[in-house]
Length: 327
Length: 263
Image (cartoon, rainbow over all chains, first blue to last red):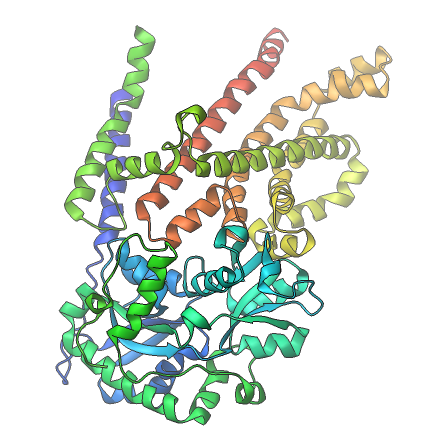
């Protein structure tokens, strides 16, 4: 009897192990070919509720995806790092992400492929903010303080570290805490954190709503005009679905051109997917630029700065993460 | 000899599962599911590559593990003391119990992670907030069990205590507390496993050290072996705490079993 019980326990254990490893396989069944010859017509993509992803929403709303025969389901995520985990785990087909997280994932052995560039920094598009009557007057005062970022080890920590360095501090002198962008205003006001690394539209909102002050622009010097975010898929997905990826790229490129040339279009779409942003706020926020091509030389800056800060152990060629020259 | 064999008989499934796990993960070659040997190597790298004079423990090991265990135990002890004290009073005073019971049931039903943002606003981020979250989340099983234990004391004991004219203090320490002890221990055991869960959750959100923070950091670095290594440590920690608790319970409550047998 004892033996039988033990035997059963083993069988159960084996079953558990097998199920676990089976989960990892994730042989997502691709939709069978459509009229347009796409390998897969339904795509689930992760996106952050910030201006970076405007082109995705514009492409969806104006029917650019439909025109290519794609049905795109946009899922809201908190940060690129979290979204990439979903991508490699198989719950997302593609995702918006910041490039720092992408290079980090690549260095850990994952195989992300960048298929579209979405966003590039401009002055004051990513700022460090402090509460209304904060005693922190310069980044040099941040020693021993808590700074909110949307995800650890991403573009936020990289650019803040670069600002700290300019003021004689290192990332070891501060403590980074993870909070979603929409929560940061509250955390600043409650004093949970001393500073917050924010982007629009939250930057404008936090100044208007709680009188927060700008401490520093984090997109200066080594991060000036920095490449911020793009869309990635896994290498496996790109190999299996080349036509789907190409169709997606065409649709995003078309939307990206609109975002780049027509600010009004971005202002219109923003309130539809970011919480608490009205048209008036959307009209005054500082936007980054929306690059219309994918350029390895520009992306290389991210990898090089990561190497310099010790976030990467060895050099990564940005080119190795691109599919081709299509944008 | 017999004991050793019996222990081996109980544990034989562990190596079998490990070997199968190793073989399956090696065959699958999925980055999300590294083989156990890779996980073990990463655990060694994370915690045991420090200088020899510190027993090879790394900064991460010395910073994170004691911080986490300290908060867990502090929260658990506080919850145990407060829960037992309040529970005994409520158990012996049916009127109070009637008033307070709905509140207790309500508070107990709130999933503690939902309260994290409020605790974060009330207390600065740090051990104080985390211990408060743990205490709030785990006090209920102790409190309710202590009240139950104190409520259902054998009539005979109560009458005997009255006949002998025991003072209030004597009644509490010689009668109520010992009689409720088995129930209190049952509550404490549930609380201990809850405390581990809340410790991790409170460190995943708004924290700058601890095992949970290390887990988050490993995740953000795409260090999956590190993530699994941290999970293994949490599992081992839970197992060790539970075993230690059971051993302590056997010792403390042994009188209770013998007392029951003689009556």
